[in-house]
Structure formats: structure tokens, C-alpha cells
Image (cartoon, rainbow, N blue to C red; front, side, top):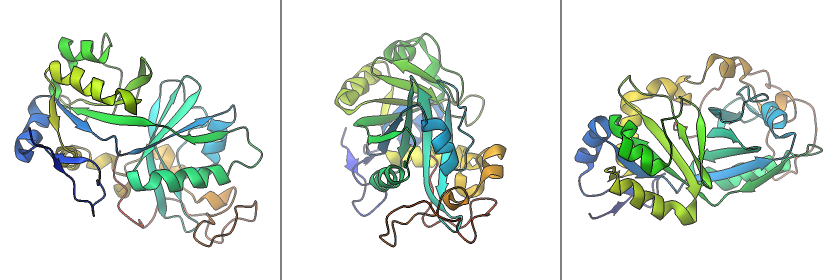
Length: 276
């Protein structure tokens, strides 16, 4: 099995593009079960008692009361109401986990750290890997045993597994299943071996992107796919605090709202915001 790396100039630099049979991998994601190593994604953690209400004040999604084990998508906007960052967010065991595009992990951490002010919140990078599983056979006993769970979690719910967790993403169709396994990076190779022995085929990010575009266009934030509460809350960070100051080099200080901070929904994208 020859791993073909993704182009260094592309958004998935550092990941495996495919393993020599991209079309076969895409078919397997529809009919069987595949594992896509997406450990190039940036993973952050938020801790502290104010983390949920604080993040709620900075983003478009309603997350101030996100229950333990819940997962959702979220966006932050710039001062003109345009999408700046998109991430998958999971609340588990007193920690908020955010995973985002590879090139946005460090900028997002920098922005969140600047916006803490007086809140009891700590934002950190996490040395964790995201492994995505696709296919209708993920509910079979051998796969469940490899995951260390008795049954698949409910949609948008995360289940602890050792030092990480397994979460179920919104199903594409009735017979499709999509899971993310988020584990310490040092354990990722062991998880991949375990799942491969259970009959899950390795696939590249090409298969993942093809699957996403085929089935999950309704969940793409660029197409308005966040839930209705998120769209109602859509606004720039300046509506409660201030627009990002990173581009100008100014330090983040409390100030008046941005002139167009009343943006009702995400607008034009700076770059494509891919779903997870």
C-alpha cells in the first residue's frame, strides 16, 4: 500500500492524499468502512469555568449551555461578518475541544488567547490526532470492539474512550455512518492498526473530501448549513467585544462595536470553510 502525500501547496499538506486507488477508496467509503488519517488538523482545548459562556460571546453558535458529550460546528467572524474560522466543537469532561483546519490552528489559538481578558478560561494547543471513519459497516461488532464501545454514539454525541473520545458526526444518509476518533497523537498509530485489523480500510483525504461533497453539502457552513440557532446568532466578534485586531498588529483591547457588527449571518468567505 503506497501512500501518496497530498500536494505541499494544498490545504491538506502533511496528510495522505490516497493509497494508490483513490476511486476504490471512495467506493469503499460508500459501501464498506474506511479510515482517513486527518491528524494534520489543529486541535485546541479550552478549560476553566467560564469557557462556555465566554466562547458563546465570541462565536455564532449557541454554546453557553452545551451539555457534556455534545458536539457541534461553530464559526468565528471578522469585523465585517465574514467567516474567519470554522471548527468542530466537543464538550467532554470539563474540557471544550476545538478542531479546525491545519493552517488555522495557531492563528485561532492566538486570537482566543487575546480575547480572554478577565474570564476564567485557558486556551491551549492539544497534541491530538483526528481519525475519521466513513461507511455503513462501522456499526459491525468487530469495529465497535476495536473502538472500545458497546454501540455507536448518537449523532453529534461523543463517548470517552481511554485518553480520547469517539464522536458521531451527522449522518449523510440513513445507511451512512461517519465517526471521528480524537486521541493523543502518540496513540494514533496504534488506533489505526487496531481498526485496520477490524477490517477498516485505509483511505486518503481525497476520499474524505469526495464523500463530504457528495453527502454533506447541507452541513457546509459556506452554504448556510449550520443550524437555525447559529444563523440567528450570526454576528461579528465586535458585536459584544471587538473585531479581530491581528491584521493591524494592534493588541486586543475592549472597545466599541465594529461599525457593521450587526451582520445577521456569515457572509463572503476569505477562503473556503470546509465542513470538519
